Image (cartoon, rainbow, N blue to C red):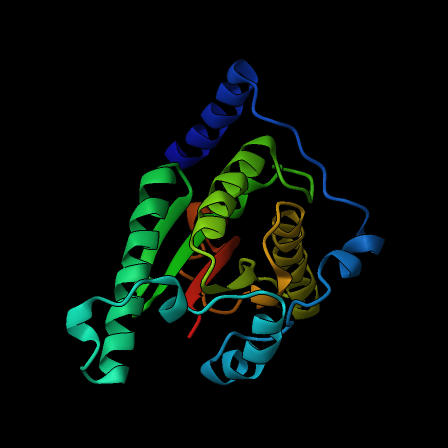
Length: 227
């Protein structure tokens, strides 16, 4: 109940401060927006396969973005690359964490990757399948940071709470993921960086009580260094 009250507080705050409204473009145009994105899990193998396309679309590698310290020039290349990538992702993590201190949003580390969890009601309308005014502002904040730290791949994964109809759960989760991806392309995030998936009710992160179900309806952004 406290979490729900926080969401309504955010809505009220936007009404007072003027959060920018947003509407997703017509669904028939989504494929055009998402041309170049991969509709598959972001695995190590899929990143390797996508790398030529990513580089051909102007993508950058972490090792080409960060200046290598002189004391690392003669060290082990794999170890040096890992050190550079870890530092690069740490800076990204801290910037996201500082910018996203909002209810329903969390920033976590998963090895070298950074994971941003966006609970559905924190970024989308309560009863409409579209991004809310607060969600629009939140995504623009994330996009600004992702454009700065552009030597990264991004997996955009949608999830639902437990549903009897698994096909409907998949469709809803994919809808959320694609809406976020379209928003990103509209704000100049290169689709060659993107992996888009809908996972339905898989991988719940909370129980199935009222609050838990709200938490399980989410979009996760997993950001990995490009190398």
